[in-house]
Length: 70
Image 1 (cartoon, rainbow, N blue to C red):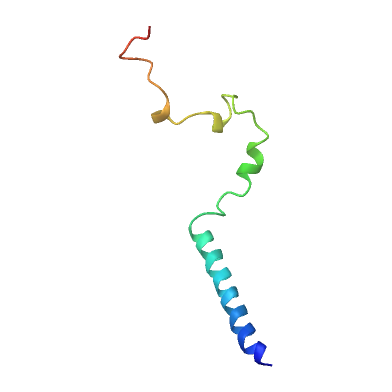
Image 2 (spheres, rainbow, N blue to C red; image 1 turned 180 degrees about the horizontal axis):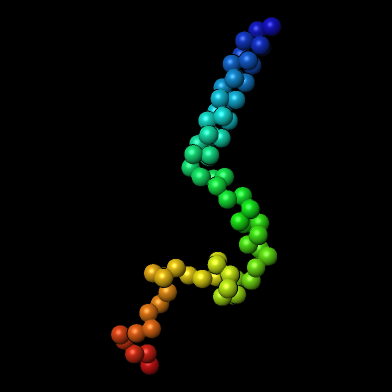
């Protein structure tokens, strides 16, 4: 019987921590896109028609290189 006085609050504390971590993960966007990564392995990254292969405009190198290469 004395073990229950320790185990019940410990179990409630563990459940409380698990619920807190779950709500933190939901609020921080961990579950926003569940299907995207599963579908991304089906596409070739080199395919220019695939959106994951296209870099955003600010990451693409400029055509005009100020320093000529030797």
